[in-house]
Amino acid sequence: MLENILGKLGLSFLTKTLGTMLGKIDNDIAQNAAKSLQDVDAQITNGTITIEQVREANRHVEMMGDIDVKALTEINASLRAETLSDDKYVRRMRPTFGYLMAITWAAQMFGVAYIMVFETDKASIIINAVESLSAIWAVGLSVLGIYVYKRSEDKKLFG
Image 1 (cartoon, rainbow, N blue to C red):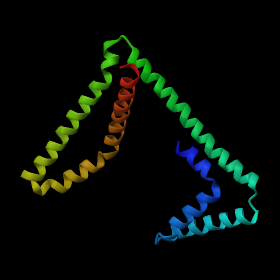
Image 2 (image 1 turned 180 degrees about the vertical axis):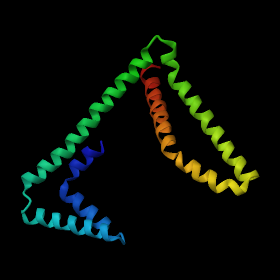
Image 3 (image 1 turned 180 degrees about the horizontal axis):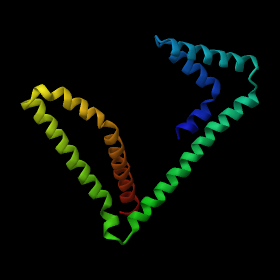
Image 4 (image 1 turned 90 degrees about the vertical axis):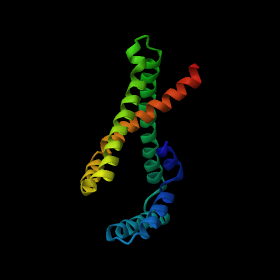
């Protein structure tokens, strides 16, 4: 979806916007990127980069959005198949996963709270350890978020 929006905005708009945003960052790499984007925009404006080349770039961005739509269609089809399944385990997989995530998250947070209150000298170690788990939690909670969202959609469609 983002690719479709970016494709509709056009390359010239994106180079101007990103160049302006990066130009405000006090960093050599960001400044160089801003300058490069300004150069690209100037080349679009003066015709060195042709309209056909810009259209082709925009088309590639739009194609990326089509690939995402196909992937989401496949995911939705598998979730619908799960919902319609007569297998009780398959139908209960999402709630089971949700409850396990909630229990695991609660256990971790209670453990962290305990350490912070009763063993404060170890709090920095625990905070660093929890930070190391952020990627794993991001994946698990993302899956759970998709499950919840899709289940809400299923309820709207199937009652």
